[in-house]
Image (cartoon, rainbow, N blue to C red; front, top):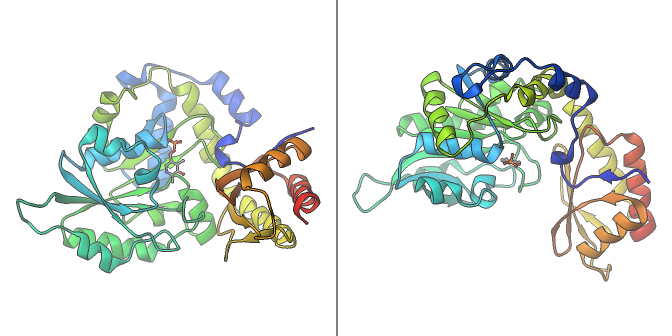
Length: 346
Ligand SMILES: *Cc1c(COP(=O)(O)O)cnc(C)c1O
């Protein structure tokens, strides 16, 4: 039985075209800055996001870490959301490795932060207080349901930051999903932010890597930090080659995943044992709970879906699921998933 893996878009395998590009990639020692394929990927990424420079980084976590450490010194404070990936899912790296203090504000439903909350969180110049240095946002927002905020909101945050002398960072792991949902170029979403990270290894299907983009001076600083945390790679063009294919072929097709997510959600809405979140899906993720009538926990349902139907789903809580659409989920897989849920919980 062919497995249908809806746990995440990180499960995406590289396409045959990526594997071919990887095999043929021209490479050099990237620690010396001599890998032509890495250099090309970095230039392409910077261009796409409207920034001066880019830096290829092994993971999104290391990209965010390098960015926060490039913006902040020890004892400085970053303002971020209480559901931010940086806050919840990156091992506390910014404080463990950078001594950066985090000030968490409540994320609104769309993943944004209330401007008044940000204003109120900026510390006074006072020796008792940490120094507020950075505002970090996330778009699309993972824990908020794959939601997105508008470029206009980003501009308002950027303006506030400039008025108060703060830097801004965008965790744009899925910025191209936000761009597809908003129908704007990614660079418009990125424009208000001093730095942006995005992942090549999620919906874009590359096997490894993220790119951090920003000004030339900022990237020079982040480059040093990437080395400090052990992220300097050698013939990394093998990996960057897949990233180039990702940028050339994958960014413009993400709307298909969003449309399939809507199709899947429509089907699942007819399953009596499931209660979909209001408004889901916003992009490529569906969040839903088990109805009260279902006597089993989510983990048990997920195990049965896997064993009986070959459908892998994400367990996001005691009675909660996350389903993520991506390149390798076609219309037939959507239909099979609906039928499987129908058979189990219909
Ligand atoms: C996946 C993700 C990251 C980075 O994750 P890695 O697994 O380290 O590449 C960062 N932010 C968000 C919102 C993510 O979803």
